[in-house]
Length: 466
Image (tube, rainbow, N blue to C red; front, top):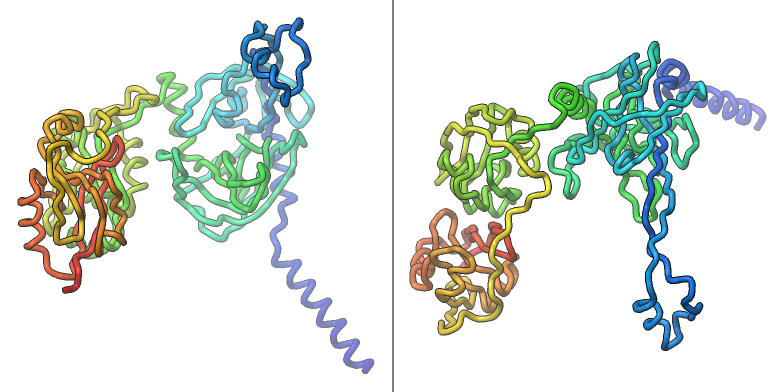
């Protein structure tokens, strides 16, 4: 019994020693790089409407509450609002990187160093699309970070974040790279680095270090249902941020390329319908008339496989690659069209207004007036567009989906969709639609281009087996 106890004690000590020796030691990294991380606090004045002081204090469940709430004179009151974030020094003469949302609408920005010195900062420039801002403080001889290469990071490697979560300066958290090249909703131009490093409010704008002590990203966002850390953190790759910095310092603005297309993901079913040998690329669902892609001869149903020599593995890759291409430059594009590859050249345009959204005429609801409903081979009940609807949609033809039966009932089609094309064949009438469907073998996936709300999208649907 004693021998067993001694054995287990020795084994436990050995395992503890081996386990401890395999864990990373961050102490040297924090000691060397920590002084270059700063706290960023901002102040702004907000106007809050207040009820007129003469109005009675009426509870919400009182019948007169709505009267006083809506009709009593409103007196705007100014209130000072403060927020906290993080940043890091990239040059000894006082240039600092942080998030654009940290300093958005700030009237006063204060930067506090680890040695407790405080400086007033000014915004050299900010780019909301990448959430990067460049600040400047009047100081020299400052500690600065070492910049790394985000392209060289590997999933699974250790990383460390330093920042001011909830105002706790110089807080250190560590974890691993969970994924690379993540796309987030409304964030088309940043291939985020995903980590499991604990990031909380106040960490925004702080650096993400690799084990060499190099900054590989800016901590920007978290995925949370509670408002706090839940194991999913996202950082802006440092190369993306430094490209923004270079443009802000040299021209005072950030320019991005555009080609004027709408893209969607290529699913296995869509790949089969277009004859693609493998799933990948960016499927063109619409082309802006007169835009760079239209002038180059790009069509809806084309699948972009390569852009300027770079592989387009998914639809999320294309906006980032195009945006990073200099406006006015001529690039080669490899397309998949009608069962084969095709190379074209294209001149890059420039995004002019970040808030501009192309608007289309709204489609009238309900059945097309004066047209009859007919059922197709797919189990779709459709009707032809009338002249008024064609004018509103700015199309020459199309069919409105009135009902879905058979295999169509299990597809992603919806009542009210307007079918514009089968693959790259434009649809002008019910009879033509059925003639096109007759050429499709049983059990084959086909792609329907449909207008939905104000956009177009390809929907895959499978022909019945018999």
